[in-house]
Image 1: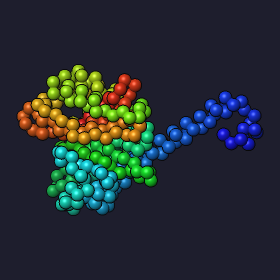
Image 2: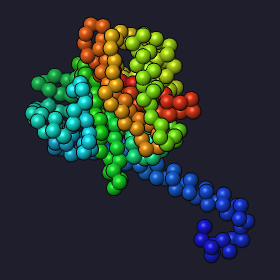
Image 3: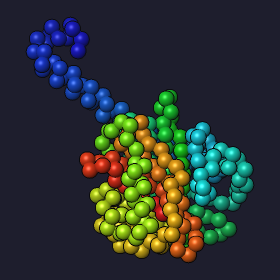
Image 4: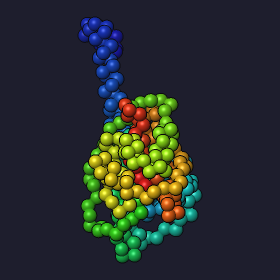
Length: 280
């Protein structure tokens, strides 16, 4: 605290220390609020640019330098997007419904519904985007993935507000690799109770042709997943503060079909827990 202000207030040293900590805490909280608002705004600008610039141009405009796409193995996003052919007759719209941000405010996640119009047909699904924030404070997507589209009505309204999920527990140097390995082992063995126990209480599951499933419906949804004969993590990224991360990989079903998983992990008091679980 400013020495002149200290003399004017005549406050005891211990109280001044507490006040200083309080002011610092307010400052940190304000940074997190501003960063979260920036994260949501980045997703909304991304969606607006898809209408203004076209889908491919918007994806290229907002991707991080090291961004990836899952096709189904991870590939560098920039060259893949540059090689894609864009159909101007395809209209893609989306808006975020849920988001969360790391304590370090350098890593965030958004998810929500999308609507697709192509060749006179309407479809819809859910998207999941992992964002990273550069030193200049700009957000860029690192991983953008969505569930396969299902027939749907384009008149369905997109969300106007965003639910903010709770922050994780700051644990520098931590990552969800071991937790992801345990969960993959449980998927292979068909251990539904173990899979359910590794979900956060505010978790939601993203599955094709379904609205996001809350924790209360998760056990039944996990039981309905196709049995897996093989599963492998293909990548991972974690926030600098070790409280939020993403893992992604390939699941081979009993029928021989290759599926993709993306998990958003949050470190809670009990350890790493899945807060968003997507499986195609």
